Amino acid sequence: MTIDQFNFAGKKAIVRVDFNVPLNEEGKITDDTRIRGALPTLKKVLADGGALIIMSHMGKPKGKVNAKFSLSQIVDAVAEKLGAPVQFAPDCAKAAEAAAALKAGEVLLLENLRFYPEEEGKPVGIDKEDPAYEEAKKAMKTSQKEFSKTLASYADCYINDAFGTAHRKHASTAVIADYFDADHKMLGYLMEKEVQAVDNILKDIKRPFTAIMGGSKVSTKIGIIENLMDKVDNLILCGGMTYTFAKAQGGEIGQSIVEMDKLDLALDIIEQAKAKGVNLVLGTDCVAGDDFKNDCNTQVCPANAIPAGWEGLDAGPETQKAFAAAIDGAKTILWNGPAGVFEFDNFTAGSRAIAEAIAKATAEGAFSLIGGGDSVACINKFGMADQVSYISTGGGALLEAIEGKVLPGVAAIKGE
Image 1: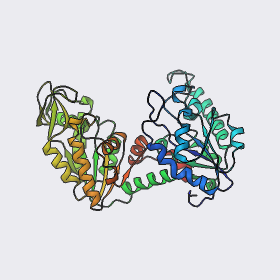
Image 2 (image 1 turned 120 degrees about the vertical axis):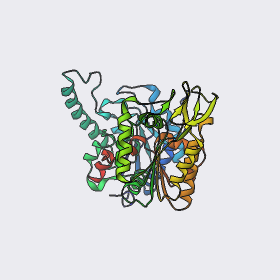
Image 3 (image 1 turned 90 degrees about the vertical axis):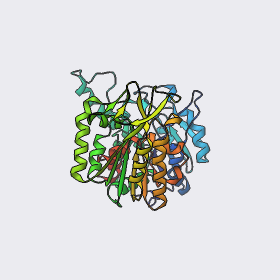
């Protein structure tokens, strides 16, 4: 069932959203992107004449009530964006009465799901090494089902619109779906768009396909790199992992970040790319600094000949040209991870060169997907969000999808 096919008139819909928004010291929202992302789905239920029960997590309260992570802090903001009053249930597992009383057009926001350990389904207060852990895990699975059943009992249908947690088999993202038949569970608009964007990257590839993988560590991206190696024409590896590759090939990298236990892996990736005919683009020069701060002294030097006491903090001018050349003319583009310490204004040039090349290729007809928190922060910092095809809201979920893994939150709806 799709959300467009379903008529919510006279029905209560329980919707899993991702309202894990950043708050300042006063409990005010500093970035409401995730709330805005869920609005089309929430408004569809209300426009049809349905009642709305919204559930989400916030932060990592680890199965305990913690006022710092209470969703009561965002009730007014949600009501303002939704254009409707929002009631609040201070205990997500004891909201049956409030849910039953909901009339068409009314909205109820449940308290943070993660105040209950059953949401994540992990035993609390017991170490994995403890002999009793396995028994505790089994008991928790039973409790998780009961918790999911309780949440499901509030509504006639279930919508999952939280792509950011789709890679987790939690009570509200996957297990709850077992209590609704195929005609009464569906993906929300945001989830549908995310799944379609991943399909465009992995299944409906227009060539050439260029992927840009940045970030500090090879180890966190290896699964994605290996999965992409069979799909891409050009693979740019940038950011901190540049220096692991430079070191692996015998270079001098000064104080640059490096994974000494991944040097063989780096050489293996270089060989894999050769064997598969993938154009692997690595940094040849860098902007190095004599300290890890914005106003340090800088010099441009080869990425494999960085002086002692200096560290690579951004891609150099020659590398920026090579990146742009590998993106130019691409028809499918994936960007995950910056090319340098973009948080420092003096080290944004490498990431900006990537963003500008992607924008140019997109204007020429490419499909470009930007995913992962830092890449999204980059594109927003540069004010170029409207010049790419799609910006993903899910960091871990997107990466696991690109790695080729089945996402529990999607499988629970689609029956995969």
